Image (spheres, one colour):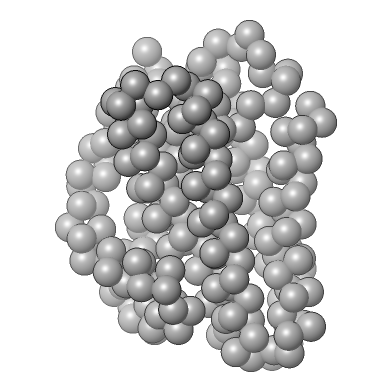
Length: 205
């Protein structure tokens, strides 16, 4: 019941922001191809505001997708009700976002702040695209009759591919202001560390 209510709420939010999505979608797709497009998007006050609003709107749909297709499924959640799984997954995701923000503040450099902030906010663009692609692929594969395990595996691989592309683009943005070694260290501290902690939590528990 709770899942259905939240799914309806997510749908209403997305419909409300549909015009913003249509306006920014070309720029988001361009971010997949060229790292400089992220800089251009950040330079536009309207596009960056629309992107930030859409990223916030995608938080709930993403958590619902993770619950529905069990994208985050540690052993201790076996046998739990759907509502409890939803609460735990939302808590884990919020903790992950907090950890990302904490690393952003801790490792903030004394120079090149524009590239540093732009690289951090590039995650919003890729998160929006990831959520949209997962919604589409999950619905399509389920409609085609694929079993739940195959759909889950396909969505995990899609997520991994998009995340790897995001890492490449973020590294390129860092390299526009920092040396390759410094850029790699920032990438490890801001991305690989928090994501690694989340993945390890799923495997250990």
